[in-house]
Image 1 (tube, rainbow, N blue to C red):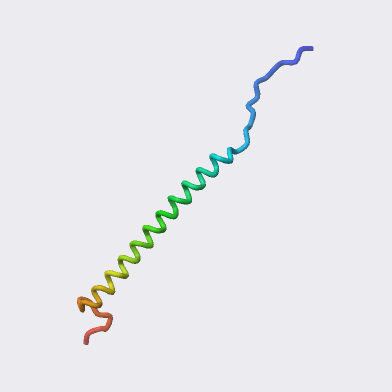
Image 2 (image 1 turned 180 degrees about the horizontal axis):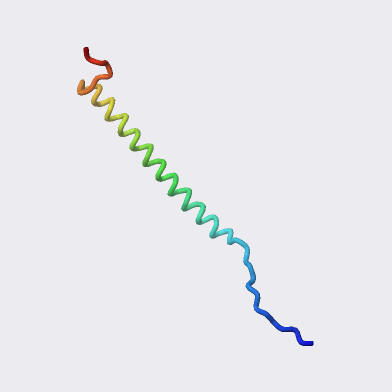
Length: 63
């Protein structure tokens, strides 16, 4: 009896360097988006207090 050789796909394990690079890129992107959100919120708060100091707006209801 002759053994038939069948080509099987060999599964390779995860590439550690590739996983680290992908993780670093995703982490930096998420951090950048969070930082931009934080800067926008700071800008809104700063604009509110600037307008409050100039008297353009008031937090007291006029009667």
